Length: 471
View (cartoon, one colour):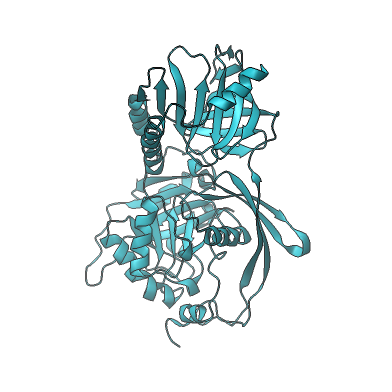
C-alpha cells in the first residue's frame, strides 16, 4: 500500500478540513525521545504517570526536538514539559514551560491545572506560539512522510516547534497544533507552515488550513472555519465562538462574535460518502461531514437603549480593577455608547465604592481593543482611551482586561501615553503573553493617531449632549 495512501485519498475526495480538529482545552506535552509505541503515550513510555494524567479534557502529547536527517539528536539534560490552557477567550490562554530531571516526578502534578484560565505559576511563561507537528510514524506513515519536512522547515525558520505523537486526523497530514490558541491545522507543506507561522505572529489566521479551534466541539469548529471563509475574516482573534446549542432535526447552532456582531450558523453533521480509510491499513468508514448553512448576522452585541450595563474591568490575569454601571445611549458605527451622569458609583478593586465627580460617556467599540471615556467637565482630560483586550458582551455586562497603557487628550490638545512604567513592570512580573504586549503597544500607537486627528475623533460630543440634555 502507498505509504501516503490515506492523506492522498482525502485530498482527492476533497474531504472537508474545517471541523476535524481534536476537542480539548488543556494540554500536557512531555519531552520523550522515543521510540514511541503505536498508541503512545501509554504506560510503555510513561509507566504509572500515563494513568495519572488520563483526565477528561486534557490532551497528553509526547514531544521531542526536531530531528534533522543525518544529525544525531543531542542527549537531553532534562525533560521539557509544556503546560497549556487553550480556551476560547484570548486573554485566558497560556503556556508554561517546566524542565524536570525525571518525568516520574510529575506524579504530584494536578493535570486539571491546564483546564483553568489562570496560570499556575509552575514554570517559565512562554509568550510566543509553540508548534506541535505530528511525526508519529508507527501510528500512521502519512504523519512522518508529511510531518517531518514541515517540522524541519519551521525549525529552520526559527519557530519553536516540537515533533509530537498523534494529534488526530492522519489523513490531513501534515498536521499541527499551535499553542496557546489550540489551533489545529492540516494539509500543511513546508511553505504553508512557515507562512502561517509568520502570519500568526502578525495577528493573521488564514482560514484555508484551519481544521478547528480545539476548545470547541467539531460542528462549532466547522462553523468558525466557514464563517472566516465567507467573510474573508483573517484577524487571529477576529472570530470567536461564544456558545452553541442543539437545533432542529439534530443540527447544532453555533454562536460566534465577529467585530462586535453576533453571528449564528446552523450545522448539520452526517456521514460522508464514499467510505474511505481514515488511516493507513484501517477499514473504510464514512467520517463525519459538517454542512454549515444559514450563516446569519443577527444583531450588534449589546443591550437595548435605556437599559443598564455593568462595566467590569480586570487586571491580567483576572484581578478585579474598576466596576461601574451606566445607561445605554445608543449604537453607531464605532460601537455602543453608555452614559455615566455625575454621581455614578464606581468601585476600584477592594476599595470602598465612590461617587464620580464628572459626567462622561463611554464607548464600547465593536472591535477595537480599548474603552473610550469622554468627559463633560474634567479638570484636565477631555478623552481617555483605556487600552486593553477587546471588550466582550455577556448579556447586560461588558468585560475587558486592562493592559495598563492609557492614551489621553487634554483640553489644550496635548495627546500623550500614560503608565508606560506600570506596563513594563507588569509585563515582567505578571508574565504578559507576547500577543497581549503586541496588542497593547499597537493599540496605543493607533489611539494616539486617532486622538491627534481632530477635536472629536470618536464622535462623542453628540452622545455627551444626549446624556447631559437628559440629566
